[in-house]
Length: 126
Image 1 (spheres, helix red, strand yellow):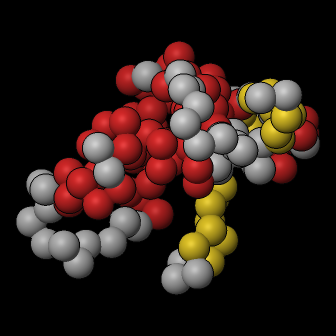
Image 2 (cartoon, rainbow, N blue to C red):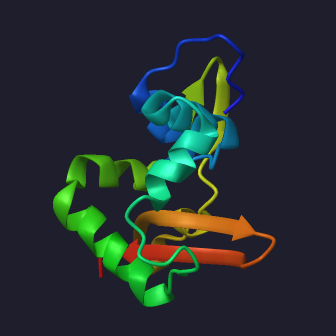
């Protein structure tokens, strides 16, 4: 997202940076806003786990996607935005399927980690 150190950023802008651009700087800023530090955020995230070695399955991610669509439709709409501009820099959604009108894709999230590789949870209108 290209956030400069010490800059005040709204939660709405951070959400767009996380959702549309996959901005790690936006994720760190949000974690620090919520819990005070990245480590404290990880502790907060893991506080309710029965087993810290749990993994998410594709089915789990489908359930999360369905809950996002159903329970927070205003936030869900951000996932369909193809771009946003922050600090004079236009940043594009990493979900290339949004540009293929034949697929009717309207959002959710791409991702990548060295451990899991590339991944995608997507939604479509038909």
